[in-house]
Amino acid sequence: MNSPQEARWKEALAPLRAAGLWRELQPLQPEGDGGIRLRDAQGHALLSFASNDYLGLAGHPALRVAAGAEMMLSGVGAGAAPLLGGERPVHAALAAALAQWLGVEAVLLFGSGYLANLGIFAALVGRSDGVFADRLNHASLVDGARLAGARLQRYRHGDLNHLETLLQRHGGGRRWIISDGVFSMDGDIAPLADLVRLAERHDATIMLDEAHAFGVIGAGGRGSAAHWQLEPARVGVRMGTLGKAFGVYGAFVAGSQTLIDLLRHRARSFVYHTAFPPMLAAAALAALGLVQGEEWRRERLRSHVRRLRGAATPGSWIASDTPIQPLLVGEAGHSLALSRALREQGLYVPAVRPPTVPMGAARLRITLSAAHGPEDVDRLRLALEQCR
Ligand SMILES: *Cc1c(COP(=O)(O)O)cnc(C)c1O
Image 1: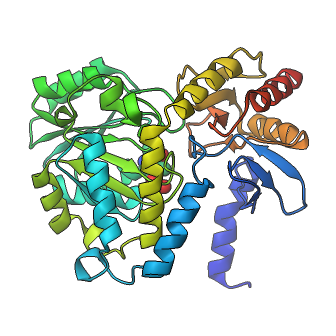
Image 2 (image 1 turned 120 degrees about the vertical axis):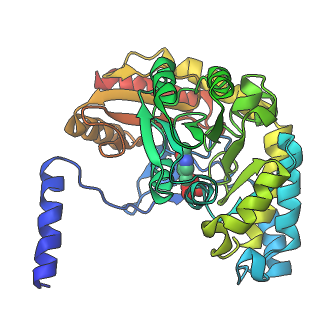
């Protein structure tokens, strides 16, 4: 293809290749139940430290059985938007169980976290509102704020003095404080207790993205509010995903009945999306049982974190107590070389490069799973020490 359009697209791609930022999709086949043993297209076995399936639930027999049974009952796809006949009893059961787990009045299911974040902003945030966002928030939160046409002001990561200065300056409409509960690329926990105090002092509403927190931190896996021992109602809006610690797919917003009523009417990414497959709602319901009931999975993760961080490495650990353990390397090319060296030893640890992380902050994003054994963590430790 040599059309002028093709030439322009090639031109856009050329600098990415040159800067070591080229990306390819690589199909990897999981083997067994834990989701950490993969086989690549060439048949090589890989031990993965790349998954957000922190509790090791994606391949769990209980989820497979629940999904299979629901599929036999309801078919595969929901076939319609939730408000136009796509809502199934299992969706309602999942929403009710999530609400009860989190101690909130109501929950609304979305097709994905990305859709949920776009919908929340479009539904709740007005053009004259001030949106105050941590600089390391997930891309979907940034896109949501832009879509809502709100004035987006980003504060330095975790810098509450900076946030307070911005809050004081704001003269327009309502104030929103937006943060990841656990930051997706750095793995650190947002200082929610302080954010809540600031929000209450400046009449702001908190919107918290719990994609990496629900299931992982707090008593019973109830996320950041539980971790900081805060009343759930003090965090106005919480978004959680079902594709990470729950091992499935989809997302939800948790809060008051009024919030959920409003989102059901106004969140366009809810109103105009096809309800997610009922078999996935059944799998998520099974996952919730394990998230609540099997505390050993979180204990095991904590012990893996301690074990890994003893390693002498070719980079520097970013401070994190969660299963996201980023090893800062700096140069994109260097992170890629390191990732390749590990891969030759049968370890899959992807390099995360700009634009996902800031320039000069390329890293290995190591994620731990309850499906790993201590011997798996030791294998990675040893390999990292050898790469020094
Ligand atoms: C993964 C992620 C999302 C998007 O969720 P999906 O269900 O994958 O669309 C949103 N926010 C954060 C912080 C995430 O890590």
